[in-house]
Image (cartoon, rainbow, N blue to C red; front, top):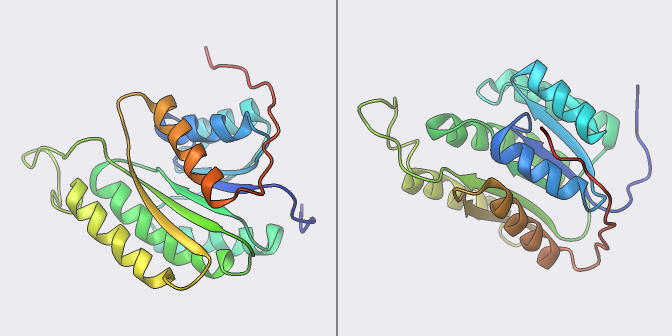
Length: 200
């Protein structure tokens, strides 16, 4: 089904939305009436989150450049543009690589929008143990921050901001912090509180 509908309110893409910090972010924005586009590499978790929150969802494996490109093309065709990308998929180096893949694929779509737009990169809450983590530096907070900063350099001078948020132990608290960051970038966004059930 082709959406191509008039863009109203706030449109947010959340990666890794099937569980964890991604789902917490999706729930926080859904509770405020934002229009959500969810993605995850786990079809079952993604379908569950999409059905639970009543929003659009599409499969994407953020580690695959081809999968990210296909997802971006679908979003460009069905929605034209969006306002916020929250990179929360995976952990360690998966989150770092996923952040770069998704930002690269979706930046052309994001540039079609207007007003303050954001890419929110959710850094891992702690550095991985090098003995158990491949590409340990890429999965570290410092490695993540360096690449997030390089992404910010690509959008400097535009209306697109790039923010790095370190995930706390409490996913819901981190999600609320991200909501406030988006509010500050989009003061004209009048969130519409709605009732969102809690997962059992």
